[in-house]
Image (cartoon, rainbow, N blue to C red; front, side):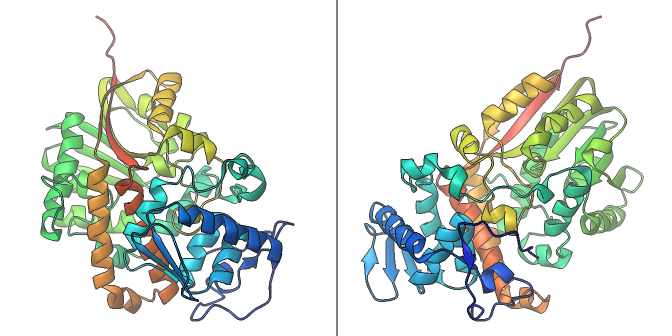
Length: 428
């Protein structure tokens, strides 16, 4: 699932036994990590300890010593390996250390929420300014060219439809829901997903006879719900697994005359539509292709048309500071992924389209709750996940991904927006 990248000169590969229970063929950098020099590891340990001592967190080391001001517990089982990984690979090393079982947290999302809330100041300012020297940089192979995008999407969405079905609700909707109340219960999730979808369709004024383009199919619930209104839907995806299941679900709903699901890159879309809907797709586009993505919305939308988007956003200053950094999420979960800021979306729309941002609504707390429900469901069905062939390391990776994402929204570091973009009709 991962590739071994060229080793920077500043770090060295240490030959040592594979981390317990980790398959070195599937997880080479988890099993036998790139190790930092002793000096760099010592500096990292000091920096980490200094950061922890300022946080409302309780870090407990294997020798019984503790750091932090109290709060969610972080248990560091293998301090030497933990610091060496962070010294060599930064936050990628932090994630790989969790995958290897070198640290844990009884309340993982709670501990990560504390870290996310202090993301901007965890690293001392002098080191922040030197980020270009120590932070891993984006590999060129992960660019979202038409060929690269297919590989990147396949890495995540073609894992297994059965895997996603284990922790998603019956709508198979893999994006933030909109709840009536918080906190929410599992049995409220499907209705909350329909509420989210209906809000987007209402924003785009989708009704009987609407020609609708959907960029990013998911497993077909939005297309089915739009077609139930009488819309004629063309839905685009790069995931074969999603396409096949979405087509089967459209068939079961007796809507094949209204829904066409194509294996097609958004850049290859043709035709003119009354409305465009795209849910949490811009995050997979990559920053260099945001202008192309928004121009596509403009080009495909008829004059007077409306586009409704749902997008995850991050603070603009953090987006700029980390724009070239290669992250743990990008390496293991969403290769090629990149979150925009609200400012970046506004700029791309203003500078590259004839569209207008007419409305924007944020509801990040609802995404935190959606992720909490997914994570709990995933944990409850861990044996079923193992039965599908996903090993212990994968399960820890996925648990960290869900908790890491939940923490981003709980801390306010991340948000999710619904946008309405409009295209003015020509004057008569």
